[in-house]
Image (cartoon, rainbow, N blue to C red; front, side):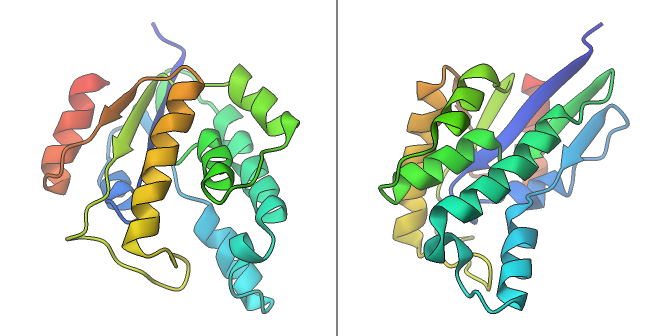
Length: 176
């Protein structure tokens, strides 16, 4: 029996990842929520309005630590589903023209996901809020860089079709 399996939901901001994650209910599946919203909210409470843009490397290092900790929090005989992964952090730095620290790149080379489900940009459901400040065109660019980054680190991206949450969930369950 498989000890554990790691599945990542990634892709364009505001493309339905978290909504789908919130609908996963199965005793053998353990879900990890998107941690960046918590980090952004804490920074905003301290008066930093855009923590990623104000200090991309500092924000990214904090986020990477949290995601790496989630990566290693495995439970036996479980499927682990992550709302974004460690490779997303590197992709976001690349998307704004910054380099990722060697330590992050080393970890991204060492650790991967068994399945990568890529959620494409979807203008009809795209929304902005206090933590999600990207405009749609930026979301499209982030998506492109995410695909390139996961592919660069040797993972195959499976594009999730633009369907209802239930249909998307069924699509993903067919793969896992």
